[in-house]
Image (cartoon, rainbow, N blue to C red; front, side):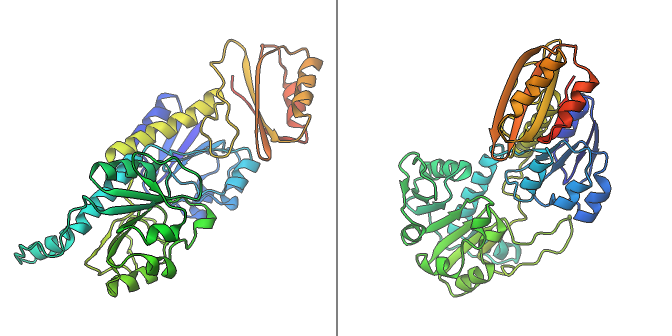
Length: 398
């Protein structure tokens, strides 16, 4: 069993997989499509972060690939329909770095409110500018959170503990935490708050979510944060509103186009603005978060390979089978049409195979069947199951 881990994934992930007997190759950077096509043949498990894109062409070259681990929150860099149609499970880490993103957001809000970047630059230039002009506490200020998911809701709690008044907007009906107040529209939120922070996901509908109209709708001299996805914000419009003074400052951690390798030149319309904090997509990049993500996702990959568990899979139905006993476990990924379970069990009966335990779950177009059998199955029955027109992939776990 071979694993390929890209983009400088935390060493704990490789250690966990190696301890389980896997051969692990690590690469400290993202790979482009052509390079990945060359490297992926013979790989059973693939680990990536946010800047390696898994396309249909890559998957076509991956004849042995069984699972992909996204060692990050988002999975929009993965062609999920293509992975699902090939029976490749995808796992991510939706919770492991939420605290890190929240802390950098809080830190950025304070830094902008106190104009710390400008003070720091002046000090390094030898200028002593001891003045309170334009410097404010965040206590009593109003924060508007767009996207009230795992990160947005935790930001809500921490911001309120600092004395901020919290408002939020989400397209889904979310329970407000603490004293946070829900806004009925984004326009309502933008006209209410003094700090706007984006924490939306990577779904296609969020492309160009925040542009000229949204910046214009913000209160004058408000601050703007984006720690979510680079493609949701029009940076040309943001620069225009910063230069005009309408937006007092911004902190941006994600960008529409990001360098794939360390040391590559970073270009952005926002460079050179003294009241803009630019960070290289490190909102979730703390040692603690990366270690947690490494262990979490590697653990999910191992549990899938060794026991067939799809707990928290992004694209597969959820089944958490118990420990495997003395028999064998067959995992059958198939198209979700009526009668598949009956066909499989009829084949077991025809060949005299005793079913000791069985779980079936479906999700969209696919079904996921886990069957524990005694030791009497034969290669013939496996061939018959693989030849079913609904079969996508059959795995024998022991």
